[in-house]
Length: 177
Image (cartoon, rainbow, N blue to C red; front, side, top):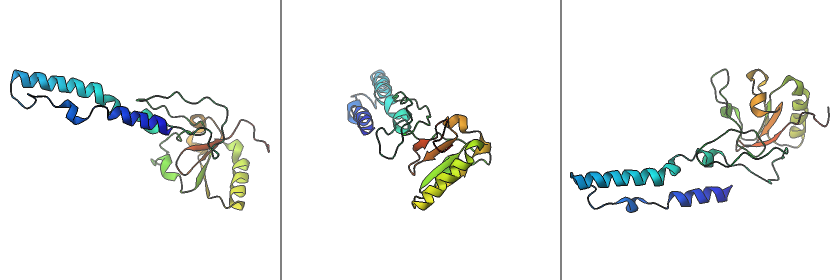
């Protein structure tokens, strides 16, 4: 993840402002107009990637982390400019606006947040909350069964880390069911 961000930063700084200075740039002449057109073209060519980097900013994900439980799904494709939300463990939790107009992210806590997304997993959510309490792991259970987010998260339960990345999501069948 960090190598990707560093590579993007290096590419972004390959063309600095002093590389864009032209002799007649400030002149009110045909040469000045041509210089400004040339610089404009150079800026678009060199800097569009820098200012359209949502895929780098939000699309990074953790692999092989001891606090991510992989679920066997494929990693999302690495993209520079585009960001496609993905609830795969290790990815940034997909955002949603809730019925009350609040942001889902506003409900995440300083500890872990367990999203209860389907009626069928209420007892599993209670068991996870009890285990977290016994282990003194800070956990907030957020009941979103009526919000219709199970499809967005592709799971009936999802555990969100304090940094808003998905740590785990429930498989179709829980081991204690």
